[in-house]
Amino acid sequence: MKNLSEYNVLVVDDTEANIDLLVFLLGRDYHVAVAMDGESALEVAGNNPPDLILLDVRMPGMNGYEVCERLKANEATKDIHVMFLSANIEEADRRKAQALGAVDFISKPIDIMEIQEKVKNCLMQEISRNKL
Image 1 (cartoon, rainbow, N blue to C red):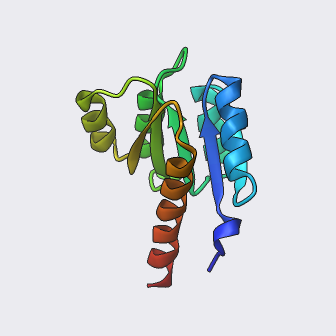
Image 2 (image 1 turned 120 degrees about the horizontal axis):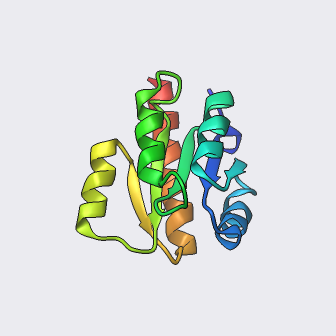
């Protein structure tokens, strides 16, 4: 069984400032990898599947929803937990995220305490499941 600090988080965002903030907030507690576009995210997740992906919705090229659909369609990555990040959250966005299998939808600008707690809670649930 892994300790919480051994879990891997992939941060996917096309804005460098958001990546820097999330790496700073989460890097002390988890192994953090980054990708700045959908194709890179799929490559990283396929090569070394993370336990959790923080995935921006709106990115040039492939958006976060498309990335999530491809992750969930792939046997090797279908069980990765996905939390969407977006500045524009409408109820339709939340429903779409849930339909795609996302575990949560977090609004930007990022609330430091919220993101840390949601990531920790998601990974603690994974630890609990692995104990069974």
